[in-house]
Image (cartoon, rainbow, N blue to C red; front, side, top):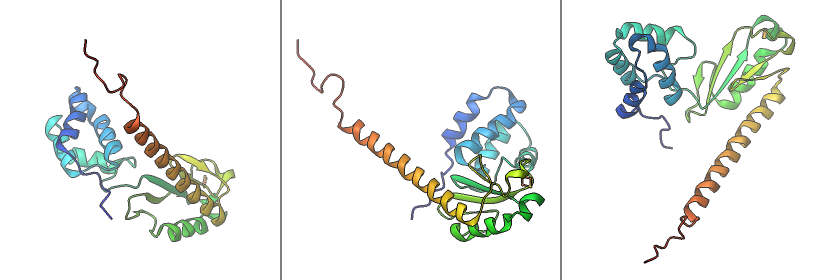
Amino acid sequence: MANPIIEPRVSDIRTILDRQHNGASSLLAVMEEIQGHYRYLPREALIMVSERLPVPLSRVYSVATFYNAFSLTPQGRHRCQVCTGTACHVRGAMQVLDRLETLLGVESGETTEDLEYTLDTVNCLGACALGPIVVADSTYEGLMSSVKVDKLLKRIRREDAERSAAADAAEAARQTDPPPNGGAERSA
Ligand code: FES
């Protein structure tokens, strides 16, 4: 299978940096945009950020490792977080985590080889009454169980397949649609 990691391109990073004109004060904004683009912070990008803003590379790395939103390694397209706070724990969070680890073939803190899923744990999310909770791509799924984990992953995969089919259909339609002028230039 082809490596799905988006390789950093100097031109992409330059484009992101060109949008920011506030020097060192735009460090967080630049890093958020790079994280959003690549789903991680490639080393090449951080070096360019450091030189361009300019900000010491050590400062860039300390920001990158301080915030949970940033990652120095490629992240999955989908993120599943299991709350392992006390309330969720006593309600079966570890069984939920076990099931996700089994189905995805990774342990907490890891990303699947195909870069589809990153699995990790979080502390109390403040919605203990709904525990155990899984946050799937920012959506809270409450009262989770092993069975519900199976259904959740099936739903995510089905929605991915539907989106992909819709994109393929749109692309096919774009290629078969005649151009607005009917494809023929009329001579005067
Ligand atoms: S312990 Fe999970 S939401 Fe509070």
